[in-house]
Image 1 (cartoon, rainbow, N blue to C red):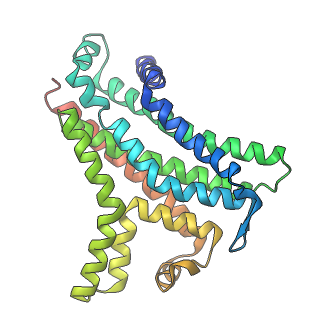
Image 2 (cartoon, rainbow, N blue to C red):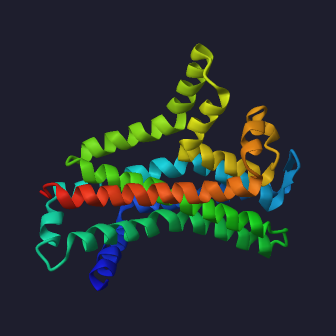
Image 3 (cartoon, one colour):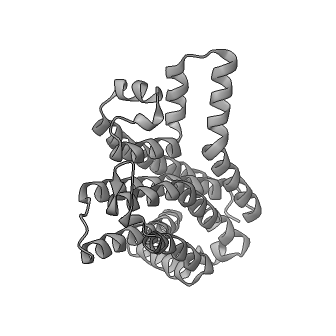
Length: 275
C-alpha cells in the first residue's frame, strides 16, 4: 500500500507540474468565472435562476469538455511511460505491476476530478457569500454524476493506454472514442431506427448504454423531473423507472463501467510485454 500511494503521489505531482493541468484547471475555473461575469445567476430562463441555472449551464458544458480532457490527458499515462522508458526504470525498483498500475489510476483520478469539483464548489461558496439560495441537493447529485463520469472515462483511458504501445496511437483512439460516444452513436441509432423500423424501446436502450447519454439525461432530470424537453423519449424512460431510480442508475452505471475497464486494462497490462 505504501508503494501504491507513493506512485499515486508521484503521478499527482507530475501532473500538477504539467501544462495540461494548468489548462485543465483554467478551463473549468474560467467557465464558472465567465458565467458569473455574464450575469447567469441574475437572470431567469424557463424557471431556472440563481445558482440552479449556473449549475445547469456548467453541467451541460462539462458533458462535452470533461470526457475529451480526461481521455487526452490520461490515455498516454502508461503508453507515454513506456515510450520514454520511465516504465522500465520504475519497475527496476521493488514495485509490483499492481502497485504501479493502480497508483497511476488513483493519482490521475485526483488530478482529473479535483479541478471540476473545485470549480463547482467555489461557485457554491461564492453564491453563499452573495446570499443566494444554494441548491444543495442538486450540488451533491452533480458531484456524484461528475465522480461517476470521471471514473468511467478514466477507466476507458487506462484500458486504451494498456492495449497500445504508441502514444500517438493511444491519442488517436481516444479522439475516436470521444467522437463516437458524443455524436456518431446518436446519428447511427436515429438512422437505423428510420431505415429499419427497429423497436423504439430497443433504440433508446442502446442509447442509454452510452455513459455520456445517460449523464446528459440525468443532468436534465434534476431540473426537469418529467423530462419535458426530451419529448416522447421521456415516456419510455420514465415508464421503465422513476426519476430517482434513473439518477441512481446514472451514477452507479458509469462508476461500474470505469472500474470494469480499469480492471480489464490491468489484466492486459500485467500479461503483455511491458517494454
